[in-house]
Length: 341
Image 1 (cartoon, helix red, strand yellow):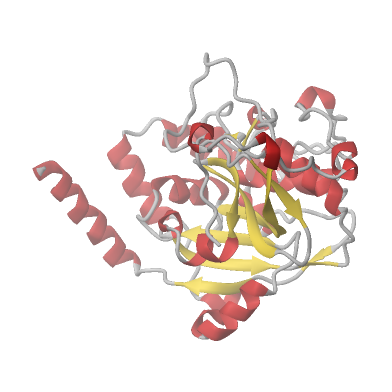
Image 2 (cartoon, one colour):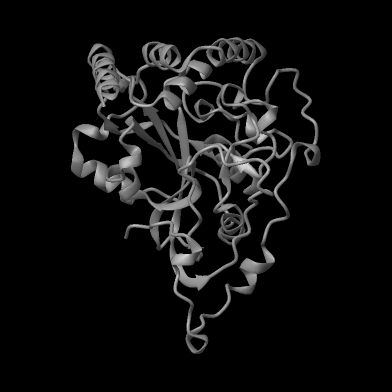
């Protein structure tokens, strides 16, 4: 099944005679409180500049971000493409399943709620992804969480925060959420709870990873299993209903994306969504500022320490990273073509 996020206006009104029943009472009772801001959270006792980086790494990120923010777009994009870290050799991360398509199919179908998907943009394939790699000194620039379940016929109110129009959306590709309620159940298909330029949405996982053009920029994709953690499905279901449709992070400047400027969960970047969801499920301490978590906190650098549960090794399910010289040549060729148009 392919999940398409449509504007509300595109949904035909339902016949009152066939109006579906409301979500289960247990789901309504489990609805989370308003999204937290940094002021609502307990102060961290740690001395580091952010909750998910040591002081030296945070200082490096600040200096690099300041330099990048002052470059013209052409120089900026060429620099981050050349300096971004590569995923190859893939075996350094864990099992490389990408050589065996049938195994990848089985592995994707076996993903459970709470498992993670980590992504790495190829060189010159995304200036946003490459910039995040350079800022965080990491290969991995995107993270999302697996949720098993299904979209129901029950329509629900959009509970996400959309602002007053004074602060416009950062990304033009933001989409309104699908109004159908998402039911969390292990018997359902694996889906992806993800924050991207489209906002926070639920996607059919297989289609998103392997067929969606939005994932063409990710030359390397890995999965990471969560084990030994008992999750509350009704609590997660209510949380998903709350955050779907939320805009991508727009409060923090892009080159300071993983700082306390991103502490307001009314707009969220990818790692902020995963961290806030883990906090809501009791896996990550609530006093930590979710907005300061970079994607690499769930991969190779600055590991998140879970209160309960354990994350397994990264398993590579897509490995299609082009050589740097060919990627840079392609970028230069595309630039010349755009000039001639």
